[in-house]
Length: 192
Image 1 (cartoon, rainbow, N blue to C red):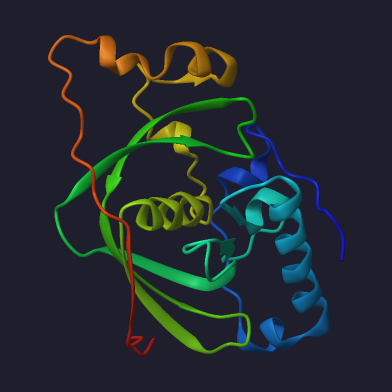
Image 2 (cartoon, rainbow, N blue to C red):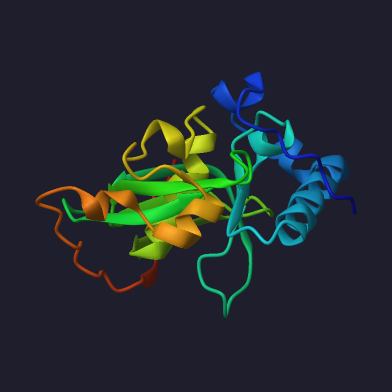
């Protein structure tokens, strides 16, 4: 296994729409080794997730941790859709936008259908932080970075964030968002 180089904002691979992975490619030893390398890279950088474009491979693959008790898992060719109108705001950072973070508004309740690293279909309905993580990582597959969605009044360098927090709290009329409990439910995959 190897630790892969992480692409930084400005590299063209981060703005491409990644191509789907077919079953033969997924089953190949080289691709399985690449998945192992992604996993090791995510661990090295202490990330909550990592998308293949972040390590210079424009394919529809993410590795992430939805539940710390279950450990990391792969989503191959994921499809996400909101399950409700519920929204959440949370602080996000990114290995490809080193040294910064900001607040992003996202769907708080989503369904994701994908394949695991063995090509078996799987699906989840997610709420709260797991829903945020899967959306953040899957955005990379469409060439979208969190800074494209960030509330620009909150974008800050990490050292300034640590001192002052999100600056949107200083805006007149700011209301603290409701807390949404994390939830992960395994559901029957939809045939794709």
